[in-house]
Length: 436
Ligand code: URA
Image 1 (spheres, rainbow, N blue to C red):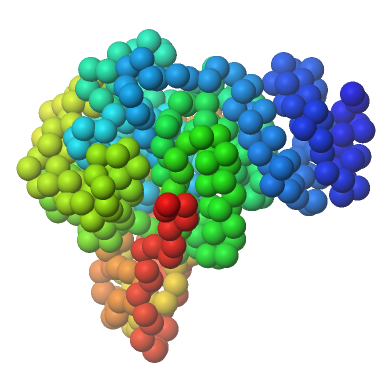
Image 2: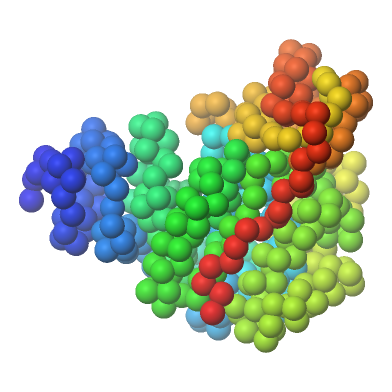
């Protein structure tokens, strides 16, 4: 087979065969196909699309490009979750310990921030000494011992996705339905989950701008999961404003701990409870979603979720005292108010831009080698539909230098549209797919 023929086939709108797809993934992972030819194929796929059969073949080829984990020797039934990425999305920090506290083992591989979206590993590294670098043996031992483990994606799992994702990021080929579905599902299949809850975001801070596009992507991923014998449910959730109030690594950790303690923003808790309940129900620990919600709430109310979170921090080398005393987490030098520039109702937020404000403050990476500053970011307790007065404090910026502080004080209000007429609040969820 010649790569130039595979590229031309897709460029001209053809349907790639299973052999072509498997060959491409095998040879590209092995380093036998150069990035420039892989980029050309990605762009052809981006422009021409892939049908369901091609996407399934691509997913399976990517999943099998490395090791396929089998965790059944340490836990009978593993659940996993995956968010398609968002701003202020610290859901895993609350959901994983609550689900584990309900007796359902959770072994999760997470990622770092990407573009304007935050990443769970960057947030967790706000804890002194906490490490996501676990060997497979350590991963399995911790899963067996405490029922909860959170690690970085290892190079051994779905290596084709690691290579292709880095290429997509710099060739403007990320936001394509088939490529996103194959990327997410190949990692989930390789990581050995029996049941998967997908949190597919739509809106101004998500890859998918509309409910229709997000539903289309979710449907495809649910079908891929089910075809591969994994119970898969997808929730379509709103990302037209940050989730909760906090954006920024340590600020989000604090909000997650406050939520595990029984407080935290109402929208964030409802989101976490719903995702966790779906995981508990899929694992068979509850017969209905209502029962699963009650179990999850009880695990929060009696402190088991928080205790499990502390166990996770300590098991991976972190300082458990930072869970009990939030003042021990990183704090920024400047903590200054954000003010509304005009009076009216909050109608919209440019959520991706809000994510970029945090990145520019140092809370994310502009280039791969950037160090992340865990202390910076902002708290924005206003929501779409709220009324604000000109000059009113609408949030608080946490910055470590004068220039980014001033930029953020200008850029956050500029990303918020305020109008004269009342605006309805946004729903948290739009649909559930694959809820058999
Ligand atoms: N998250 C992923 O893991 N892959 C994508 O392509 C998009 C979001």
